[in-house]
Image (cartoon, rainbow, N blue to C red; front, side):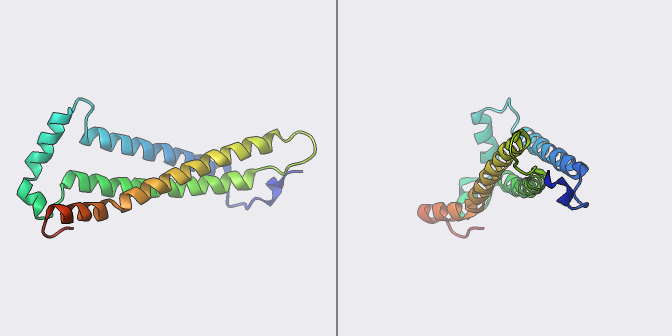
Length: 153
């Protein structure tokens, strides 16, 4: 006997599929944004020049932020929040759709368990990325303090 009959009627396979499609769309959005901001043909020297043209050393010492980097941080954080929310939704769907373990053939339950483990590992990875992004301005402030910069954002 499976627990499929106890699944709330509000959760459907379409909801699960929509969550997967949303996850793919978010990944494509992030990829497109990064490709636009940093094309594959962009060399390190061109990137340095681009950043140098945007901010002078004096601007940096006065605590000015690189608008490209700041915009990408905000965009990336927004995308990661959406990915995390979608992964939580997928976790709920997989958990609710897992058949009960019975004597005999437990292949479906094993597969669901492996999928759930994979999704939870990705959730943990995304949480780590979000933690890293959250400390960017704190780390930047510490750096500015050490080099003698003035006001910071």
